Amino acid sequence: MAPLTFTTYVQARGPVLMRTARSLTANPSDAEDLLQTALTKTYLAWERIEDHRALDGYVRRALVNTRTSQWRKRRVDEYAVEELPEPDPVAGPDPAEQQAVREAMWQAVQRLPPRQRAMVVLRYYEDLSEARTAEVLGVSVGTVKSAVSRALAKLRRDAELAQIADPGVTAAFPARTVAA
Image (cartoon, rainbow, N blue to C red; front, top):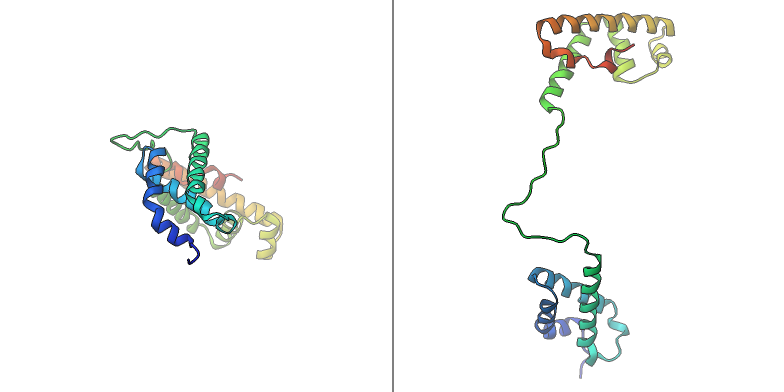
């Protein structure tokens, strides 16, 4: 007689074992998952099981133990409902509005004189320190401070003029960007 293989065993005893799994759970899908888990445990122990005539008992014990473990771990009950509950939408900034703000800010920066624009870009867009900005541009730290101060003052004036023309524009000049 040829030795019993795991595949042969599952093919021969699968329907009987599925009935046992179905008796342990109310949901057919859960029964399939339960049987799959028990068969995985059996497969891992296949070489250690000496008496293959007792395999049904081993798998049944694995089914019961696995189901008991699942039952103990389950903390939240699942309920079937007609409609799936949708989470409340997260109130966040509108991406289109954020893009408009970035575009307005960039246009205002582009209206700065080239030297001030370079310093503002290095300081606030590239997030360089005043010393590093001065080093990159080959100027003193004091020059960077005064030029950036004048540039920010100009951006604030532009924001105030834009505010007069369109009250919704203040968001285009966030505090981090225009604060000295």
